[in-house]
Length: 419
Image 1: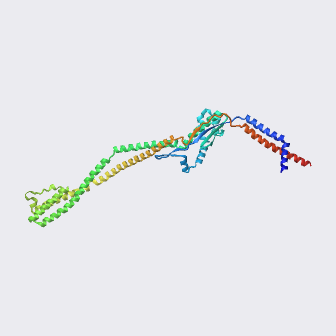
Image 2: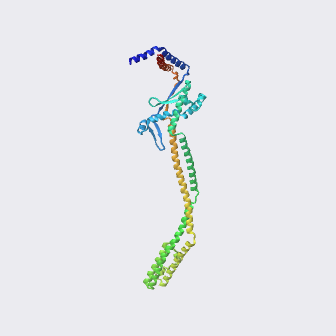
């Protein structure tokens, strides 16, 4: 092994000029290229990830989640950080930066994707600081780009995570439409309330029902009184002209007439009973019978009259027709009332959501915050002359050593062939 190392060292020493020459040539070439290359500057801005942020939900409450609570809820904080870093290189942010800087950006960099390709990048620095860097030939331009990019990135991410923007505007438009719908149906209900036939129909139905009920009452009570009167008539026939019988029958006749008067049925005044100087109480059986038959005849006539009125009149048809018309009016009122209530509930819900959307929009800026503005760089980050020279020299050294061993191998091969 020592002989092999000695042989290799001998080759290096005998070919040192080749090795040194290759090393110096590579180093000089790298140094010349570095001096001839345009310097590249880099500006860095910092955006910090907020440790707390409000979370607005569509209900009467606002929840603020801390980082510890996020961890408690099994939120992958690392994944969240990686997502925020990945959102740095975003075409939407690039478009906003170009619009923001306007004429300060050269025409070449105004092309879609040009700024991203020029060297804008994001990385997670120490803690929760996202470092946004921009590279270019002009130190002033890269500083402008880095700061503008950080500001637009902050706005874009916070708006994205807040769920506001078009969603909030959409909710507000829906709330306005719901309010107009409520006002429309409320106006229709007010107009209907002021101009409908419900009261008149109810009064007319009630009146006709009272008339019909009266005639049915006349019939029902008349039938009962006719039965009582017929029983009294039989009682008179049985009692005959005895004094006690006439008195009892007279009292029964008076009670029958009193029952007719008390019931409100019939017209007992058409038959006048004479109570003076004995009157009906002392009348003979024939007179009492005549009075009873007169009462019965009057009751039968009024009962028959009520039957005729019910049969010949249109009371039942009128009541059914009026009740149908009344039900239509009441159904219309119920429909308008339900539509009004539904429109009001819808408007209240959307108005609450619109208010919550407004709160959500006012909380923009709590997901990430632009914390460290970029400073115009004084020294370029590329080309790195010293580093490039050292690397080129190392590469030249390796090439020189390989070349030396290659030359030695060829020399040995020629010597072997000559022998």
